[in-house]
Image 1: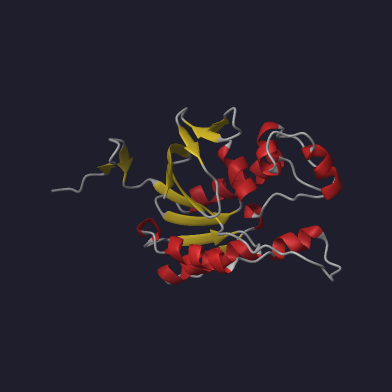
Image 2 (image 1 turned 120 degrees about the vertical axis):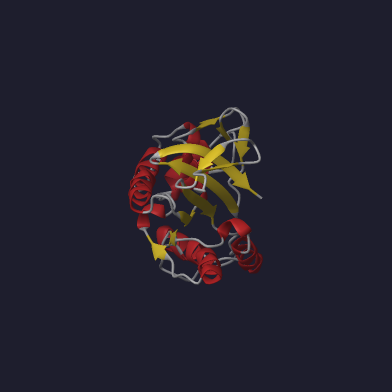
Amino acid sequence: MPMCAFERSEKGMEFNMNDTIIYLIRHAETINEDGIRNTNEDTQMINEKEILSVEGEEQAKKISENNELKNLAIIWSSSYARAKATAKYIAYSNNLNFNLDNNLNERKLGNLTELGEFMKDKKTRDPSQEQLIDRTFRTSDGESAEQTRERMNKFFKKILKVYEGKRIAVISHGGSIKFFLLNWCTVNENVQLVYKEDTVLNIKSPCLLKLTFRKNELINLEQID
């Protein structure tokens, strides 16, 4: 008797066995650095080299043990240190190497003085949240939400074509993930991302999102605890 090509989820939604599953993961928590910086590194370089805290290392290990992240076909990560440090646990548990793509990097903050001016009197204290509202804002040497979304789209278009029907883990950053999800989500009055009018997403560090695609179309998005 032939195997059924569909499975039914707990919510009653049918999934094709050939659907592409992308696990989109925000890196674990990073270390707080206080005090004097005796360095000539610019803010972008400091951002790229930011590492996980001790708690963040534990979080990354724990998320790698989630049953959803077993038997992956391939793992992709941002080139930033904190994303790679999260990816290494998922790679280890799957006996895989992970791959890097700069399109998954966090959006560039750019000039911090200009960013500070932008954040004056804003509703939240998080620039990435405010850029969900003002999607074209960018500092003189930074990136807007739309620019970040475009490069994220470029990456996902490629992997949906190359890895159709596979289970893929992608480790990225809060701002970049939020802006990518604007393809399907709205922003509510509390500046939160909402999927299909009733699912509020919390893009904390770390978080695990499961995106199910049929060909190039997203058919389901859920946040996994």
